[in-house]
Each structure stands twice: as structure tokens, then as C-alpha cells.
Length: 426
Image (cartoon, rainbow, N blue to C red; front, side):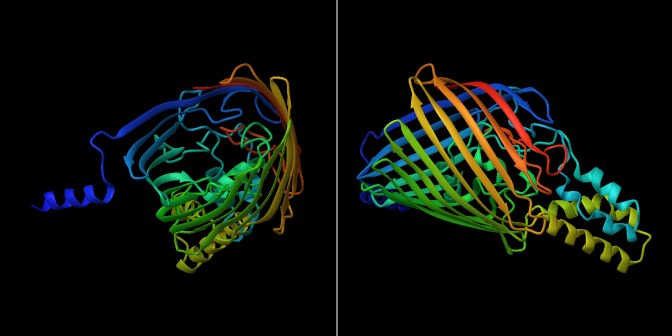
């Protein structure tokens, strides 16, 4: 009886038709090429302009303006067949090692042990969780008053960031190559996706839209946040694609962690498309601190067992303070760029500046130029080059859409890269 009552209520609310219209699509991108990087190897890379992927998405028309949707998207590395890209090079990111000599007063063996523990060449740089559908895993309901989505999705702030990037989050000119903070890719300059999240989205026929996202415990790009909040306001009409996005995560102790504000977008006018964006990032409580303290407890603490408790506590507290200083983020960044259509291709150019406001003042400027030629509606070939001028402790090195660039060989050294590749959409 209860089952009949529930079924009747559902039927009266949604007026389910006898036969719902269902659509399921398999899609993907296969993108690979050759990358040369100063101070790194010349190698075959996957995801040069777009991260290679395979995805499944579907819709079901329920009726009365309601629609059920889902999207599952898996990362694929064409060069290795795996789902976990590494940094382009194995150069040491010396940002984490700054200040470790302060531990010599406790034991001269501590700093060398930590340097060995913190340097892990060949470790996965993306998808450390080994998730099958790392890129997107979402199910939702579209209603006449907006869409409600659940799962792992792009964050509102990052969607605005990507829309303002003249290199469309790809190639060696990707704006994100210089927004990671002095800590490099391991201290993200933006939460790209968040798992364990719920999102509400709305789009008006006038072109205005917006989104709100909330992530529970275990949310964020790496699943380390105690909670996550994000929101965006967008306008997509009359040649404009503009947005204002805000993300804010909280660390494992519920302290404010990475906070970003992004504004910008693009404007299309005849053969030109112009891009501009501003990005602010702040983080005083990196969620990675727990990882570094775990390395201390496993590698260093056993060697200090014979020391008094006060000494062991002081040494660990000193190490934590060093790591907090080394992962601190306080920077403003902007990018300007343009596309120009010429025949069956387009010229892409951009300039990006990262203004690091921490004590190290590790600024960076990136100049990028590319040509993208469309052989068909689905297939294009591209060639791109970029130069990053690093200051002080900055070690930014250009990467691709699918793999972070890693680090230059020494702090302050210029980063350079050149790539050629082919991309096929299906």
C-alpha cells in the first residue's frame, strides 16, 4: 500500500509519460604530440591542446520541463595508456626545501632525510586518487527553474578561469602554467574540480546565468577539504562570454584554505576573439600540510625516538612552520590574449603575469604563440611555443593540457617549451 502511495505521488508531481525519450552518447578526445622543454626531455605527450578522454553522457526527457542527465568522463594518457600523468620533467621543486637547514640544530641528518622524502620523481601529478572517472562523475536533474547536479564536477571559479584563457586551458600557453604559486603544481592556484559536491545552475534566455556549489567533507580537487564553497555569475550572448567566479575551500581542521576570485572572459568580433582575465589566489592553510607531516612521522620521527619529548615536539613544530611558509599562496595574476581566424586555421597569442605577493616575490611572465589548423570539423593540428621568465625562487616550466610542466632546473631560470600535435574529437 505504501509503495502504491509513493508511486502515485511521484506520478502526480512529474506526470511521467509512458515512454520517456532517452539519449546516451559516447564521446571523447584523442590528442597527442611531441614536446620539447628546456631543461627537460623531448617526449611524446598526451593531451597537448586538450586532455585526452573518453566520456559517456545521457539525458532522459521526463516531461513538464524536467530532464534527468548524467556525465562520466575518464582521463586517458595516449602515450602510456594509463590515467595518471606525471610532471613533464623530473627537476626538483626547491620551494619545499627552503628553510630546512633550521632543523640542523636538532640533528644534521634531518634535512637530508626530508629532501629525499619530498623529492619523488615519476610520481603521479594528476589523479593521485586513481579514480576511473577523474575528469567528471555527475548525475543531475534539470528543472524549469534550474539544474541540480551531484558528484565530481568543474568548480564555478575554474569555469570562469578557463573561459578567460586564450589558450583554452591547453598547449604550452595555458594560463594555469604560472598560477600554481611558488610551490608549483603541488600547490594548486585554483580548484579545478570538486568531488563530494552538489551544484545548482541556472541559465536565462537573455544570456545571464549562474551557479552555486557546496562540497561536503572529502570535497575539493584532491578530496582533502572539510568543506568547499563556490559560485559564479556569467553572461554569454552578443559575442560575449564573461564571468565572475569565487571558490573557497577549508582544510582538514576547517580552517580557511585556498580562496580564489576570478573575473574575465572573451569577446568575439568578426575574425578576432579577444580574451582577458584576472585571478586572485590566497592560501594560508594548505591541505598538503597533512601529507608533509605524515612524511615526517614515517621518515624522521623514528630516528628521534631517543630524544626528549620536548625536543621531538619542537623539531616537528619547526618543520610544520617551514612547510606552512613554503606552501603559502598570495598572488594576483592576469592574462591578455587573442585569436585571429585565417583560412582553415587560427593564430593564438597571449601574455600572462603572475604577481607573487609572498616574501620570496617570485613573479613570472609568460609569452605564448600558436597556430591551430583544422583539417576537418573534428581534427586539427597545432604548433605552439612559450617562454616563461621567472624571478627569484619561481621555477615555472610550460606544460600541456594533460600534464603539468614541472620545474626549471634552478630557481629564476627561464622556462621554455615548443610542441606540435594532432587532436581528434569523436
